[in-house]
Length: 276
Image (cartoon, rainbow, N blue to C red; front, side, top):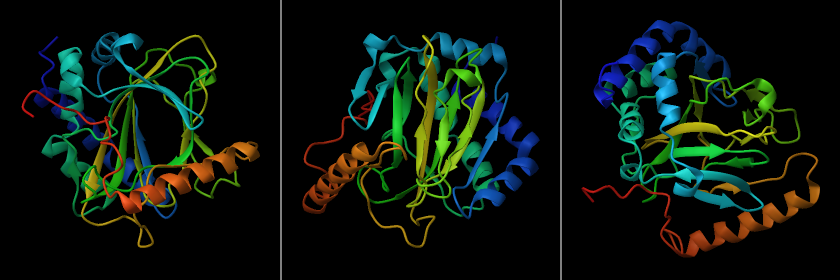
């Protein structure tokens, strides 16, 4: 197998995007008036993606984020993990990849995030979940708008019945969600704005679903109605009490950010690389 350097991995990603370009452009165009998205299966060879999954850190090496809002493991300090994971993360930030995704989504200006603010690795095991939410609207300095979320699923033989799938709510949280399955070797790219409610269904098997994620930013919001907001959580339609609690939680955190522009404490979900 060739050395899995970011430049090589980026070329493989570019090749697949080019092969699927017409289809994914149509998929994004047809969905962008609500929550724009597209997906590509078999992004890399199965052998490469299996190797990436095999190098995921243990749960002890990751950070558990567990609250009423979410329950998952994350990893962002990429220099503490197997080198191939960092190479893959930054392959998605290669100019060739970014420029192709610009063309697919019709977005004039896109910038990847070398700090991996809220990006990096995530892993979810049995009973873990992510409640419906809107992503934080900006980067860590509140200079640029968060506009695209890239999710690459790497767990071999992950069945649709296992749960742990991305759900989008294009008609709002009172209507039925659309499930985008987190299948092995699938890349999902989703628009993020003030209407892009999404969630992750609970994992229902004794196994872990692993994902590599990136965000792209822009100087212009995708939605003309978008305003600054913190990550905003809600309950699922049947979670009436939880929804009230999460609304109050979001209200408090939003008002704190009005006072403290960059937060009360610095968000730890940022990659502090050796060069920093």
